[in-house]
Length: 567
Image (cartoon, rainbow, N blue to C red; front, side):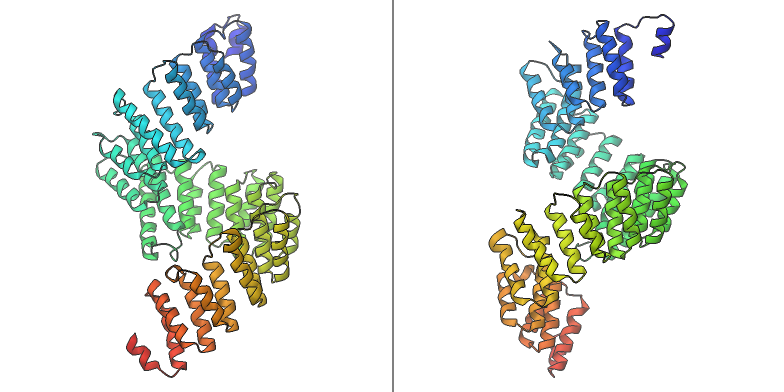
């Protein structure tokens, strides 16, 4: 349209450039934006505040933050719209500290903030939760909250919605609840903000209760509401019932909730929304229902890369490695890009299933996407090759770059253990030290496991003690299980009891006590077996394994009746 205007002999004025810069920002066309900037400058329009503000926003939207700052510094006396544009640019680029400093500068220069200014400043607090720390973000949020109340802004929908979001990110859900409950009218954005805060904090039951409360109050959920409710369900399905208070029965209930949300989303006509579909595909993947995930995927006419990746992960989580391999080939044919998150998910699936063909395909995809320098992907690739018993390729990836972080070393060491190459794992531990890197708990778990498989008792104990003495790393269940298994099989109960004395017995994982029960049965150590049994059933009273093991120990000792009386 601009070109047609010029061809027809019309000269643009300052106001013509405002929508032009906005259009360039919307479509991220920095090249055209720069050319228009030059034209506006030549014609003397860059002295107009409205033009400079539009230009600033264009550069910010096109990820040219330094140029946006340069434009801002051109203002001799910026108005509040210009200040807000620069504040928003900083927040959108994750520069929360810079945004808050600019907000203070705005006050110091006597500029009176608007509601929009306060909203952006509160959003900046949400950014610095990760950038600085929660406590600082919380203190500044509370100050801005008080200022908003003083100015009469607190009743504004976006002010209290943003406060709810930021308080949730700061981990102070009670503050968010107070803001929510004190509002006489709950707009849809406020409901969504409160549900989102609960999801972020892992309060899944509260998130779903609030969703149903919202529906019961005849507030119609939008696409974002359904996405948030499904995210709550997905969070539950992620949790390992062995490690979390959520039971399998509860997860079955959550599956029913997710299916009900699916039905409601269909009724609301939201199955054409890519975010709702992606959430449903991910949810069914977590439920190990890949066929349902595929059904939802197929109902979406135009699938984006995000939905393809979600379905790929659903196949992996459902144990359908062959189908995942076929989809990976389809994605390649249709030029659908894999994202890093999906690659990590699929690599984990390959590792669990030992699917080397799929691992090789992913390795090729990583190289093709020029992501092979990504340390997370390299570590996952090494770990997966190790899990597929392909140590040569694992070594090739490991030595393919001059720099390795601790995670990369750990992945290679764990692969060596899985392949039965115990000496290689121990050598890697020493090489890590020589490289000037600090081992972590995973490093020690690998080398202690290597010693366990090789029957190296003294070496394993040396590494076990080094964890605390040299690196202040407290042993966890993986370290204890390896040591308990090794010393138990060796019948070295004196040193085994010494190791257990070091730990707080109440915090020892049930699996450790079960390994100890097995060792006590092998070597006929009844007294230690009784102690291990008491701790095991104290931690998991309904677990049958401990009772069966102890029953066998008593039976072999000829005192079955005594066990039955005590049980």
